[in-house]
Length: 623
Image (cartoon, rainbow, N blue to C red):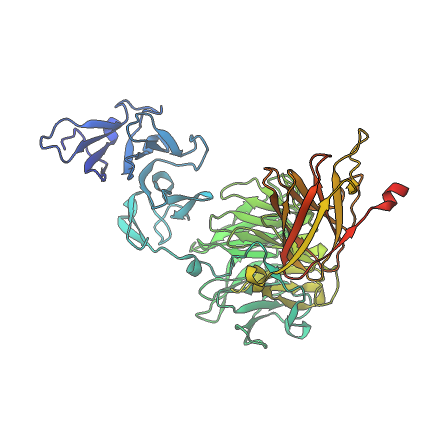
């Protein structure tokens, strides 16, 4: 190939066509390597005139051509990545702040690679980092600690490549080196457990006390279970860290320190323990597993009620007294001032404010979740954003569940949220069907199925839940019932009936009679998830499950869940979490007042359900 300038990048596609990115001429040109005569090159992208229109480029750098012959261009001075589909002269912005759906802000991207799933990996030259797209959007991969020469930093990287194992090799230009970054599998990257639970996951409602006040002291707050199933807890009375190895009944190690009133701790994958020592001493300490000594790693002017170390070794501290979450990189050689991760420092309920934040969680995308205690909500701060999104609490965009002083939060492998709802004395979680109570669902108390101001919790690798039951001065273990996910162990119940001219009738409004319905009381003896499969010879049938009572004059009152046969297939399904000894009423009805016919209800769940037909709600007619 003959060109009149340097080729800032080269690429040979699957058809042996050679591409050259000519930054000085704002174009990408190509020629087939099968041409016997070296004829003039053809234009692949760009007009040759510098610009930002869809058919223009400005100082293009890295290029990538996929198996569909679509061309991706790192359009450096336009701070974007352009996709030129095969045969098209107009590009589509797929990364950069000017994309149709804003993705990520780039500063002179210079390199680009697509993986097997067509996710983008980009050298963000001006920001001295490598970023990548994924299911949940873009995130920083390496060079996420600012420009520099440390092993975790880059200085104006230009290009990169992957080996067959997924390890990344980066041309770190102004550090005059090539850096290799190892691909870390999820299991080795995380020090804590993020189990994947089935939609019907259930925990034994009766907890087992693994540590009482004689072991963990009064008002225990901090607990952590690592991927080896080692349990860590802080005794606030005698300033110790207590450890239990998997299945140990008694503590296997006690670490003595000079910290006081610790509210939180976090353990990294190398066994280092980060513990709150802020209320009096204004610091976070690290106990080194290698040296068995404590060192100060963060200076704070408040207790860190929540501690978290993210995948890039950034330590986060939740400071309720200052209504902020702050952070600092553990790679910084000098313990400089902390950076703000969330909150303005002024107590409030605006999207950029917090009020007494407690537990925190940072996911692999570096999105920060905060238990915003006094605002009774969970806030999500996407990476780099100062405004939070309410993802749980009655003030969320889509009202979810009412919280009272949430203090702890964990995300599972599917990004469902688990929350310590402290002043409601329970642990709850989100799911496909919304939020539900998991443990502590029987009111405040000291019984094995009750909690009293729980504060934090953690999972082991089997999904068992460990809760600091603070005002009961104990740590409770709630066993994950794996059988709740085994459909072969589900017990089936059956009920058959029909809607006839003698069935009860809805009084939906004053205009006339409504459709026929049948109300059936259900007797539930075991708490858990139940699946209802309804078959009917009628079209447009509906099923409703009510808690406590069914009001024939107000069909929306006390509704737990409902669904229907909207496509006239003669079948539909309901899934509901039912509690033992609670009164539930199933109502079967139709869309049209004239519909009559046979129907059946088949239920699968952890126990048999008894059905008793209710002939009529006489109290409503006698009122």
